[in-house]
Image (cartoon, rainbow, N blue to C red):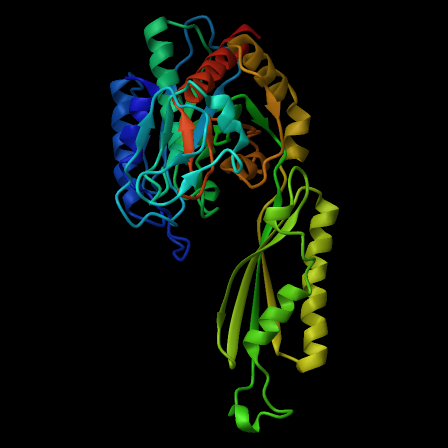
Length: 406
């Protein structure tokens, strides 16, 4: 089976996580894909492939005879997708010999434009895979799953010698809750890579420090006609909170190592309102400064409107894994060599988000991230190219060869 055939098979199974639930998995639909993957691992000869009660799929490929002493390497991809744009059936569109220009997505009215995605011009002549513009595609992270499966098939069919290789497919990465339940003992690897990045050749080991912020505002609602010096409009205070934050430190205006405040929602009425944010920064000091800014806003508004008017809750999500991986930089050097051997230009760049590898690194499994050939994640403009996915597979195969030679 070709890697693109695997991708199309996996994205047909919708697997949105549910951020409002605290169970793992947060959605039963993830079990449907997990069962499929466990079965495919067994068909590929991974005899100890297993699916546990938390919806994690694990498999171990024993070392080739004579390679048992090599470092045990793992590869991880997640099964869930975001819940946004998951209402209808996912209808992928494959465009062979793509012309590298703006393209309408089905009859949705949405356009995949080279202005928004300049790399599209470099994809001219490739086979482009998109949704019809009404849903996500699911390439994040089902491209990573397809590439790991393809890697296993190539190792088997071409008899490529290797040390022990562990694979895992995880639930609830998008919710940030899955990795806490990852069974490191069952996975049995010394180091690992997540395949959860963007373009092929991407190598990432620096991610955001991240937290959620929730402001709850208690207003005082009276008739507008008699509101003079009495009414406290909670929705207006929620708007004030956002206006007190740096105007251009938002996702649209930041890139690279620049952090941001991202407003997720404001909802409520005059009497009660809630505003929710996510806060991101690569630098630990800058990240703490952002948290301090939020606390100062809470303090200032309570001084203006009265004690208890505004309550801030901060919830940590994950930390920058650079502090862990920098003690194992051979992981990055090996990935760079793998890109060179595979004929794929390397792209060492920061993750403007997080992956399962962030939390796993802090649990003792150093785990940088590799690109999958996908782009435009978390929305209906998500896309990938067949050639990009094939390149990602070549990088992984070369990486395995490098570890086998060490």
